Image 1 (tube, helix red, strand yellow):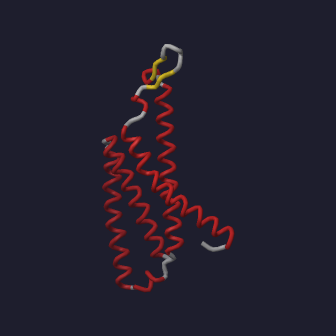
Image 2: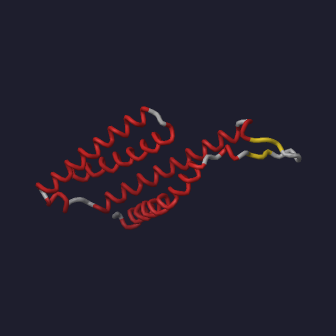
Image 3: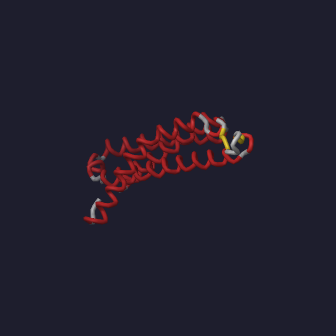
Length: 152
């Protein structure tokens, strides 16, 4: 059980690590850099701890419930991708309401400029789509399996 918790902490640390890396690359904030460095250190420490545990007691590795672990990880990735997509939509909507990002055409219709959507948002939206679909379908299938047959 303790090894499963260590693996989950390692997974969430890696997820936060990639998020902080993306934030640092896009925003160049010192806060993101500090989080990136802290998660890098925690990733190394957690990896070393898990390697030492497996080398000292290999039976711990055999007791890990990988179905539960992959189910939790797929749910986290699905929620992460969903939050990212919602954040992209909210940012686009906010920018579309600003007067500097649109004009009215001859017929009185609002025409949005290309400044409403950035290239990185489009790339992120489409890059996370396969992860969202595959992990989401796995997560939902396991949830349905749990409710129908009372097992993951």
